[in-house]
Amino acid sequence: MRLIFCVCLIFSFSTVASAQCCGVAETPVRQVKYLPVSPPIEVTSYKKEVETQYREEQVTTYKTIWETVPQTTRVARQVPETSVVQEKYRVLKPVWRTEYRDESYEITRYVPETSEREERVIVSRPVLEMEHREITETVRKPVQQTVFQEKRYTVQRPVTTYENRTVDKGGYVDSVKTEPGKTYNRLTWQSGGTHLDPATGQQRYRLPGLYWTPLTGEPKQTVEKVYKPNLVTEQVPVTTFKPETIIEQVPVNITTYQDEQVTRVEPVKVQRVIQEEVVKKIPVTTYKPVVERVEKIVPVQVYRMEEQEVIREIPRTTYKTIFEDQVQEIQVPRQVKETQVVQKPVQVECWVPSTPTTTTTQASKPLVRPLSDETEPTKTLEIEDELGLPPLRKNN
View 1 (cartoon, rainbow, N blue to C red):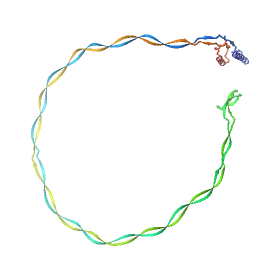
View 2 (view 1 turned 30 degrees about the vertical axis):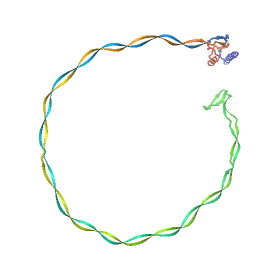
View 3 (view 1 turned 45 degrees about the horizontal axis):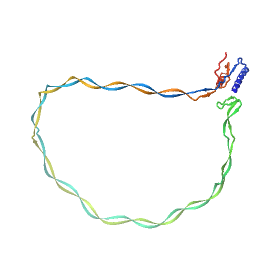
View 4 (view 1 turned 180 degrees about the vertical axis):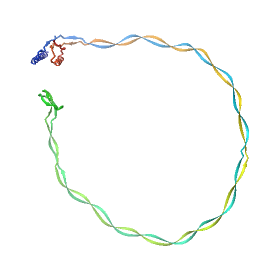
């Protein structure tokens, strides 16, 4: 509490001094008040509980009861009545009679007649004769000969040469590797002055204070194994196979064919055609038409329509409506009232005392009130909120 009182006095004196230095005619005056300290008080707290109570209520319900009631209904019934009516009408009745019709016709019948006629025909008749004929043929006879032919084949012969090859005979050596330190941001005190704004690229004034500053740690050196090559040139024997062609004379048996003319005499049958005249008798059949008449009389039934008067009896049924009274039993609903007493649950809220606690009021706190706060209203409100003061008022 003493610390709060001292801070308030220092704040009031500094405000008066700054106002005098700036030459303000009307200076704000702050009053300091104290709140008394009260003794500890026992406070009994209550908590809310909900209880379920049952209350009796009368409930009225209506029950439907069906009753049988006689009901008289007037019903219409149709009674049929039958009568006979005579009806006269005229009809056309067919009358049949027999007539005879002549349907005679003629038939043409062909009678065959056979006769002979001579016909001279020149016929070619084949005649076979035996003749001797010379036949010359060409015959191919085989002749065996021995001929030397060249046979070529390739043989792979080994050839050894020396080549220069570069071999790596290096190894691993120790190497020092330097790693840069890590960069991190830290709050550091910086004096006021102009600096380059990275967002806009312009020079702007910066107030002194704490700012985030990027810092870099110390570099770290580590020893690693690094492979160091050592190239050495050596002569290495290389064996290759070179192809070589060899020619040999090989005897080969060859069969050739020679043509020879052979003549022989063979008997041959020769066919010759002879022209002869032949007389043939050919039978000829001719048909002579003969007309015959066939008599045919056909009876035909012919009818004609004659008008006649006919009387027929037609039964006719008519219906007569008769009304009768009928008694029927019907079901009629009736509402019956019933009263019942039921237990209805009700939620009731009640306050129940809990464990008593002891509370102590705050110590006396200095209250600083300005008579005029036109100069810095925002700072005054912030101080009042921090100190828990009531709202300030102006002095006229």
